[in-house]
Image (tube, rainbow, N blue to C red; front, side, top):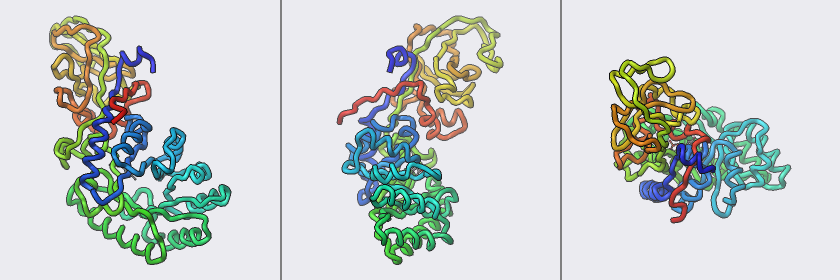
Length: 384
Ligand SMILES: *Cc1c(COP(=O)(O)O)cnc(C)c1O
């Protein structure tokens, strides 16, 4: 990471907060194993440092979407003795053989994927660790109830031949972030039915699991053998309706700031940034912040994104551009180089990722995850 990039902008990642969040979540699901979900570069926080910190705080499983992410964890030295790694989004022709050899747990939602896992196991001369995923109502990945008997039958036959080991039965909830949503109870009931069916046919899974962050926080009956929190581990509430991070003893992990590269006086009636959607109401000062949509700052936050400068909340003036945006400093003249804090834990008066989500009409998951590769991640408190 170059020094100049660090000076322009940085995303500080507080790994001590992340470890505390893992412990707080584990305390809510004391009988379940903990899978730290680190897909999408650890929701933008840096996958490998996040994975190591989560393991230090008691996680025993890691979860990724793509097999390439899971293989990168193994390549970083996180071996099967240190963590089980489940990955769940396999394209046809994916790296099944590498997955078998790396001891990954590979999710299977249908016969095509199962055939690829079996072929990889034959090639590697090792059983493939597979987890059968049930579509209990999400309507995304997973095997439909009508197709479950066939998939379970094929998987157990392959297990009988020593080609696979069915290590898990699992599913995913659609509306766990809306307490009392009418889809929740039927999804849990269907999951129990599909697990019971597989076990009656002879499946002996190591883990049965369905709980994401909101379910880990608010739905104890969903914890089963393992919970899979993502966003809550990063200190962000899965939804404002469920509660604030502090309500759950969680603390946001990412703090995004940039150094103001220009502060200047402008007269009243001056248009600001592309399209002149903002016009200065009177003589004022403008500050230029060197972060734009090329860094993951949502263009939808044009005219609304909040920034803390010199103890005051300012709002993005005009459009977010690819590399930069402007704030109206209302006549203040902080020196160039002053920090503009876009979001952080909030306890120093700065906005939070949730504030940005509201400003941009999205969810906080997207705010942190989309912070781009051009913004250096600075990992703090790497050692516990
Ligand atoms: C992303 C993901 C999770 C984690 O979800 P959060 O809402 O961030 O806790 C868990 N399970 C699956 C299958 C996922 O894709």
